[in-house]
Image (cartoon, rainbow, N blue to C red; front, side, top):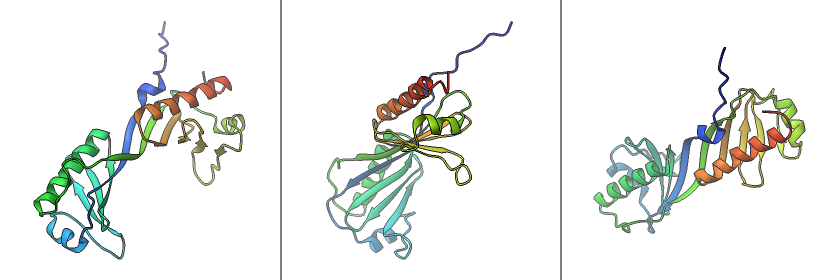
Length: 192
């Protein structure tokens, strides 16, 4: 007799893939000088308005703009964002740039994956959720794009049961979105 195992709770499968955050150092930067003095920095004003600076551990990319704004991307946790930006602040301080002790860091966006644990019929989901909230053009893109109002995020659903959530700013918001999608699909009889 084979034992049937319950699929895991989709909220337990959530993995952060990318955390985007911003901060500022409240002063303008001479990007050409910063790029020359900051080891490993890249600056090509014809292709990007900012200096691209990558930290190795954690592996995060930070864009430094002339205005003093910084945008960090590529982190897999809020902790990694904070660690990477602290390194960037320290490296800028070593160049003689005065920076406040703890500049405010704001998470702008999180991208996470989750697994609903079963195959999805995307055509049925499109009809069930309503065409006003869903975009599904399989000849263009294999996923269904579902825009939720509460929480205000976008969820990509794939036939495999995998989901990508984007637009959340906390892990809790992402969890609420996954739970909301799961409950709607159960209510519609489209998953068990």
